[in-house]
Image (cartoon, rainbow, N blue to C red):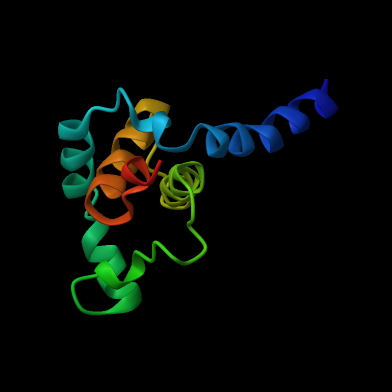
Length: 107
């Protein structure tokens, strides 16, 4: 059972990446905006990179696909123990895509 689980966990980001911006198609942007504010994401990013925190968003950097963006949001949520549902992670990532990355428009 463990090998199957590991395979699924490792394959999930690849599948999401292959979908491109389509993973944000039905995302609740209002929910994403609300969660970004409630969890003070900008304040955390500002502490890490200075200024208003927006310097952390690097569309040409290591986050180069919608799937990787969603994965990074999931990573942050896990590290900070935010206990977000998958649709909440997607909503946050969709707002970040809309405001900073624009993978949806690059397709």
